[in-house]
Length: 116
Image: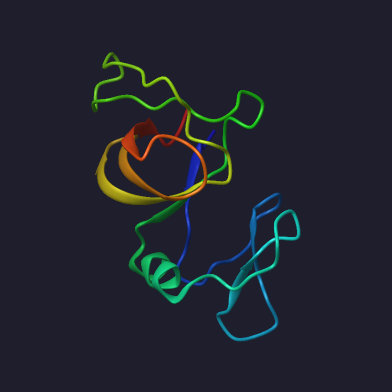
């Protein structure tokens, strides 16, 4: 099961996703769960690069586990990366993703498993 999903260049909404498409061409907006605002241009650019991910797992646990290093045995950070957060892919190594937090709650950077 995925914990994070890469957002495709044309931000196609998925069931339960916090992102949806508006009526305008390529103008994604936040879902009704939060205030409906167009995504900033810089965020849309990151989605087009293929390096923007949305956290979709951990909703029942307050988010997904973040670690200080690539190895699953590395130190676990105190805070979790919140469901619905948007992160920038810094490095991808198998099923491990090093990220920088763009929008949402959680550590500003770290390593997560993008899949269980």
